Image (cartoon, rainbow, N blue to C red; front, side, top):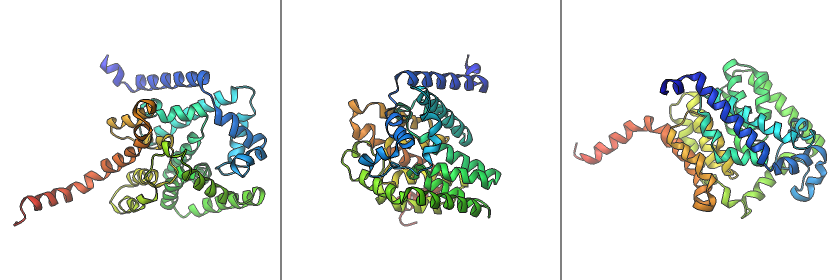
Length: 324
C-alpha cells in the first residue's frame, strides 16, 4: 500500500481527483459574489462601478475586462463554474512549474476564499509561472504576457515579475516596450487608471474594515529586501525570498493572497498556515488571518538559515569563549 502512494502516477491521480472534488463542491456551494457583482459590472456595465469605487475599473488594470468577458457572458452560473475550474487548473500548472506540493493549495483556506468569491489570484499566479517559463526559455513574447497578467494584482505580481524581467536577456526591453504601450493606450481610453488603483489601495489600507484580514507588516518591513537581494542565493531561491518579502511589506495583502507562497517546495509543517484561516470564529481573526504573516517570516527564516548558520555558530562560540 505504501508503494502505491509513493508511485507518481497514483499521486497525480489522487491530486486530480481531489481537485475535481473541490471544483464540484464550490460549483455547488460557492457564492461567486465578486464574480457576479464586481467583475460582471466591469465587463458589462463598467460605469456601474463608479458609485462604489470612484472609477470604472475597480482596483485592476483595464485589460482584466477582456480576459474575464468569455466567462462573464456565459449564462447563469456556468461562467462562474468554468472560471473556478480554470482557476484550479492555473494553480496546479503554476505549482508544477515551481515544483511545489499541490496539497498545500488544495486544502488551504486561501483557495477556499478565492473560489468562494470568484477572485482572480489564479490569473496573476499563472502570470508569475509563465514569467519563470519565459526566463528559462528566453521567450520575450511569453514574458510580455506574464507582465500583463502579473500586473492585474501588482501587490502580488510586481516584485517577482520585475526580478524575472531583470534577469532576462537583452530582449526584455521588447517586453517592457509592449507592456508600456498597452498601459499608455489604456490610459488614453480609460483615464489615469494607475492613479485610481493607487488611491483605491491607499483607501483600503486606511479602512478599519481591512485590518482583520491583513497579513503583512507594511512598509516597516522594507529593510527586509536587503538580505533578499544581498545573500548569495540562486535565482529560484532569490525569487522565493523576494516574494516572501513583498508579501510581508505590501501595505495591501489580504490573507488569501498569501497563497502565492504555496507554489514552492516549502517544509511540510508550514501547511498549518493553509489551515488556520478556516477558524476565525474559533481562533479570532488576529490569529486565523493576521497570524498568517508568520508564513512569509517562516519561509525567510528557513531559506536564510543555511547561509547564516556559520555566522550564528561563530557568534555563539565567541560568546561561550570570550577570551579565545
